[in-house]
Image (cartoon, rainbow, N blue to C red; front, side, top):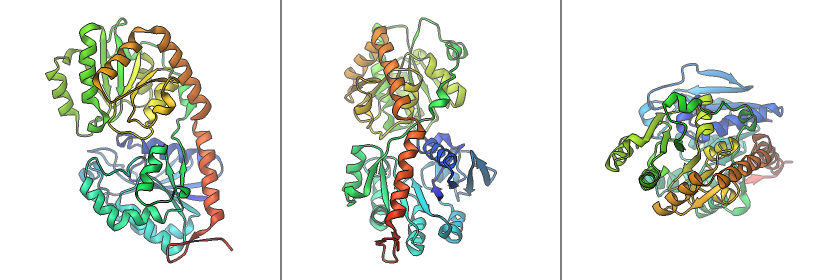
Length: 402
């Protein structure tokens, strides 16, 4: 198959979070299986940086980076890349199938238009972005009214990460028979040769007797980091050797979070490392005692899978979407509540037996079910089913192949 992946941001734009490694690993594994994969992305890397080479071959995939009109707008998730539109118009007929990563963006409007015009099937993976009750809710509803619902309705398939996301699609008028559940994964082989214990502690001057509570991800308001700070303040009153490490790029919430930390008088016990990638990220997982994701809303966070692959037990809120997989298997799931969160973290820090047991079970779970090779096998089946079914006619209806 000749497959086009369309995503607003692509490696090295790790600051944009989960969809970046998902699109990268899907592309890499599809190439390994003998498919031709082309990626269209914008040149956004983070709030300040742009990708300079406009074309790269990455793990066998051909990646084209199109210039954003404004990098600052791109950081606010408003991506405008006219060059991509021009390329779509010229090339879209040459693809067997298109995979849209992300939902509400400028490029998807034109993929939808040209896919209908030239009868090229596309699938869409929203990564939890269908909901409208967070940032830019009014703009999202306008997008949905003008373009979004049509984009969803005309997709050959929609990929949901969890049953919760299935319901979100259905609330937009999509039939359940047009939705497939496909989990996120990780490259398990990247976690086979982990750094030695203690490297992260030495780098940041953390003592051996201190217990590390790790959060790793974007510093964004829906991640629940104010709740984590509040819970940690509770813990540190009775457990003086605890250290909270907050690692990740600022996505607009860092100043507010630092203010919360200061008001709670826990500044000396909280370490902000900035973004950690590659070996530095693995060092943090290896030296931590528990990984915590206290989010207000998540779909299928990859950082939880990564922590588990390192044998690190986790604590997540029941709003993380992944709780049904984690609870009792790799960690603890709690309500979005300060006392429940602090109690669960404290239990992890003080109970060596449960920490070791959940760490071992979590690692086995990830190796068994969530390696990208297993996920892409399912995706390949979805692609083939779509191509057997047919393609869109000019009225936006799917026709069977002749």
